[in-house]
Amino acid sequence: MEGQVEETPVARAVKVLLRSRTRLLVCFLTLPLYIAAVWALLSNGREVGAFMWVYIALYSLFAIDMVRRRCPSCGEQFFVKSILLSLFTKRCVHCGESGNGG
Ligand SMILES: [Zn+2]
View 1 (cartoon, rainbow, N blue to C red):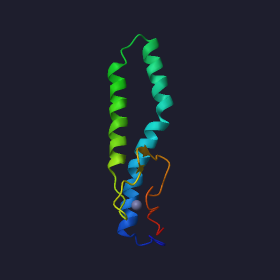
View 2 (cartoon, rainbow, N blue to C red):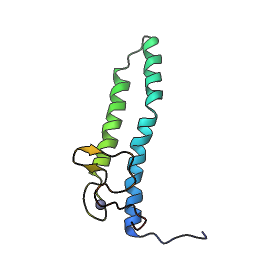
View 3 (tube, rainbow, N blue to C red):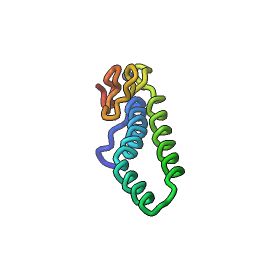
C-alpha cells in the first residue's frame, strides 16, 4: 500500500482500545432498535425476559471490557476517570494519549 505509515506500538494499542469503545458505542446506537424489538415482542404477547438479559449482558461485557483497558502511555484506565466512563473520548482521559503522537 502506498502512503502506509509505520505504526508505533502505542498507536496500535490505542487502535485496539478504540475498537472496544466502538463496540459499546454501537450497542448504544442500537438501543432504539432494541426498544422497538421489545415493543414488537410485547405487542405479540411474547416473553421478552431472555432477550432483555442477553442485551444487558452484552452491555455489561462491553462496558467491563472498556473499563479494563489501560493506556499504553501512562498505564492508567484509558476511558475511566474517577467513576465516569468516557464513551466519547478518543484520547486517554489521564494523559491525552491518542496514538498520533499527542
Ligand atoms: Zn494515558
